[in-house]
Length: 306
Length: 324
Image (cartoon, rainbow over all chains, first blue to last red; front, top):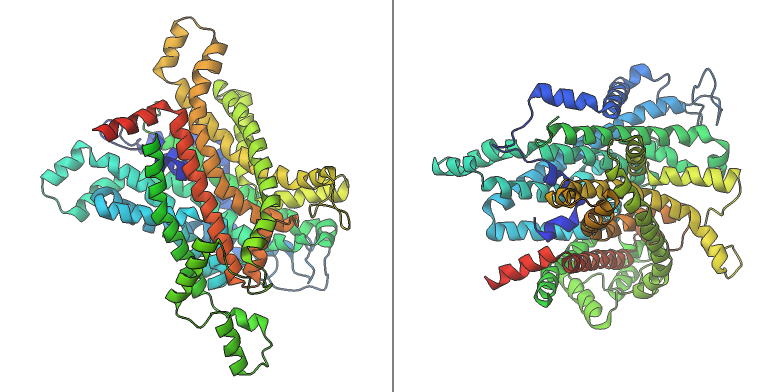
């Protein structure tokens, strides 16, 4: 384990440290995986919470009592039977906006990490497998990207390409790959020494076949574990960007921009139903994702003997 | 050791160069022209062009980069703000103090909380206490820092009226140490919750790994007391990887500072970053980005060197490799 790999990203380092599947330490069977996963009660709870959020997001038009931008006659109304979570300053139903905003968070979480994982995995595979100058160039680019404080980097790029949901997904995806590339590279370096990869080389298999059919499947576990924490991070980053006004733009609802109005003291004090539910939704969603990540780490660990 | 340090510094040179190039490319890609923010839209085109030439905005990108780098390398000069016309270096220097104050305090307090709790959690693995701390650390990493800030402001500044919620000192006063401390409490609590949350599990897993080592079994087999095994043999080794935390935390804290300083109107680097982004003040953003990247790289180099000093295995393995 080189020092340079070690310092940059401890999450990548942790995942790398825990799981590499090999001949001696094979992947757990499906049954064993489920058994271990179910032991993590909080992760199970988180899983069902996320299922509920996903249902809300998919069926938002059916479940939400009002349209997300539908205005009623009641401005800044406190929670009531008509509006369970009250209304905002222009009379929109807070509960409905909360339900529609679930779409934003889940989309950002899943799609941005998918982009980051594809870029990171390909670059990591190339760097680790070919080594030498290719490795040197890819790793130096990774170093450069990781030298900028992440949030500031995102803010600057978001201010340049402009706000909006699609842009946020692309920005988080395109800037999120370096730690995944590092992680994959580390695994490939270890797997390259294994007998079965040496055998594949000796059998004369093509390089793409070795990379994608033999090496990649065995680095799936760490990527998956890292990606889970990445989903949590992306949801938080989108919320922070929208909160600062550089993310999803009103009138579209996002949990982050729903909290944004609470920067004014009068709203913070007088309309708590406007910002507390949105904050709690972010907290519980991110918490659920993080618990699932923790359970995956336990369940996929080949050294786990339970 | 000196060889190791030099090698480490040498690796940082191309990275720093890459940082300046990427920084410059991003700023060149920016839409909108700062001149439009400065002059009235009614100004004739010729006068607008003259202003562009005055600011050096009509030169080619490469020559703009070279002149910017020259100023930076030979004069430590990051140029002038396109909005306020102050030197960027001065603007950053003015803001650095307050940011270092809250970042440093939060980092130190966060580690003072995370290290003992992480170690305790590891030695009492799978007990109620362990679950309690681990759950707390999950809360710390999952709560959005702006939401926690708003909750704290709501409770402590508005409902209880115990603490101030904005600025660094009371308006119209010079600010005694005591008032600055009072203003620091809320932003520091938010950052500490983040730092401790991120690191409790890190310290815990580092300690757990050590606790499974053979030499600890040997220590116990020798008949040493459990407290001595944990406090002397295990802890010293577990603390080594913790050195890396400081290097890892600095970039994250820099990012957190943007949000926290904005909410608490803390007059630091983060607030300056956000306001320059909002006003498209490219020269200031470039300067800030570069300083931030420089601090991150410096922190990483320092971490590596300290790591090599405290862990003889790394020092030896490097020296051994270089002799071969």
